[in-house]
Amino acid sequence: MKKLIPVFGVVLFLLMMVSTASAAKFSIGGFAGVNIPLFQEDVKSGLLFGAKGRIAVLPFLGVEPNFVYSKYGDKDFDIGGQSMSREGGTITSFGVDLLLMTPGEFSRGRFYALLGVNSNSLKRKGLADQTQLGLSLGTGFEFLPTDILGIEVRARLHGISLEGGGGRNNLELSGGLNYHFGKE
Amino acid sequence: MNRKKKKEIGNLIKKKSLWGLWGCILLILLVSSCFLFSGTWVIIYEVEDANIHPSQSFYKFTVDLTEEDIWKDHKDDIDDIADISFTFKLANTGDDTLTGRVYVSSDSVLADTAAVKSSATIILDGITVASGDTLQMTLAHYYDLLQNFDTLKNLVKSGKFTAYAIVPNAPNDMEFFDVIVVVTISGGL
Image 1 (tube, chains in turn yellow, cyan):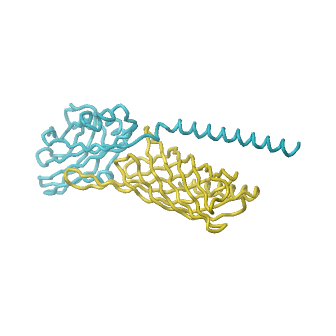
Image 2 (tube, chains in turn green, yellow):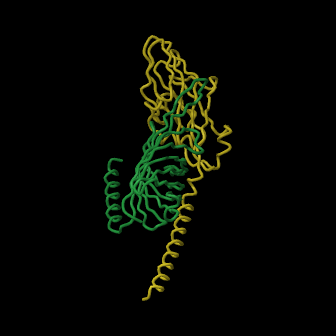
Image 3 (tube, helix red, strand yellow):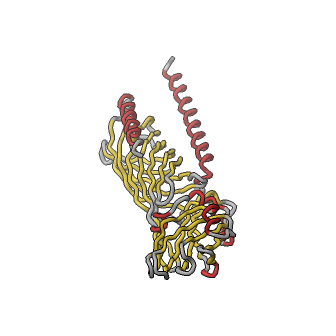
């Protein structure tokens, strides 16, 4: 993961430069929320947080490199009448989402749908770490009370393939703030 | 080139780009359908005390998941074994501290400790119980001692395997009981 952080930083910097050069609208933001496992009996919901940049390459199309760190909550099992807890584990994800946005500003806000790919590092006590491909799709809304500040809420389905087959699917509900540069 | 023509070309490019975009989206969704429609299920398998057999310096029991309802419901869609854990109690009734190990094998008729050590795979090492104490192997403690998870996973995938608990002086100076195996399977919905 430590190796990926500089790579992510360089990508973000390059995107900023490209964005500035082409005078496209660009924003950076942070968010936090809850990670809800879907159809997974062995883990519980946990917290997530992350950061992202967004370039509006076209008025209706955005590209969004992102980093998300999410946790699964520990799961309690009733084992022989005794409650025992299994640690949930963590996911560190780096990816790029493509956003289809409502063009322009609609009552100082915009809706969008997203689809993306990501690389996910899964860690859980007792199991070997694995880095796997993931996909994300979802929807969100960004409210822009000023030209530079956006308040955003998002629901993102995040599916991650597993080494031996199958996968883990999570619903990520988050809210955050974006700071905008440039003009559309 | 006049402005109208430029606009027409621009619209054409935009249209083609959009079709390309939708094509990519469809392709990604098709490729990912195998793991986007997956889930995990947990089987809590209690080994009857009567099925724990003491033998020359070891206890053994066979786990048969194939008779479990969850296994039966998903047996055709199992992609992987996502997690496996053992919990049990080990009582030391002797005067000395016990040290124990747990092995697993697809062979349920290993005759002695030498056969277990050479043929089976060790998954837990470093279990210690002081004289007169009873150890409760919790999930947290289990993962501190676990090794060879991949071999264990492949054994469990077959649905049936045998575990051997080896301790010096067993079975006279110890009791091995309340064995429960927790298996998480991963598969299609």
